[in-house]
Image (cartoon, rainbow, N blue to C red; front, side, top):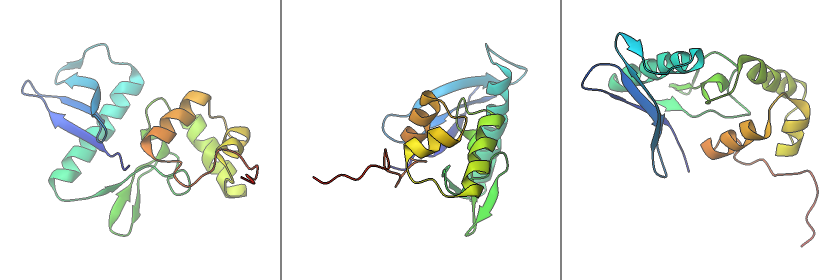
Length: 147
């Protein structure tokens, strides 16, 4: 299932954002003039989501985060759409995102276990990436199943 970031403008100004698909849940709310209980990471993500909302209002489409295609920290243009960077995934730091790109440049990931072994991703990072569909097509392990 494709989950894409969505935003909505609040009547008071500011944005609420989350992921669409399968029971959308908004993960943050930011109001103009200051964020309520927002961390630096939340504010950074809010800036990304504001840019996404503005672009969608102008008819620009976005491609989801993909472990095999997304850059660590920059948006890329792919087939007339914009691919979201790895850092746009909640709780994924620059360091973790860069470790994914560095390991991917050495050789493609053969499984989710290979991804965990070769990067600085935690189990919770893997779970979040799995939920967003970024790990689609990767088997859990490299072991062959005979049955």
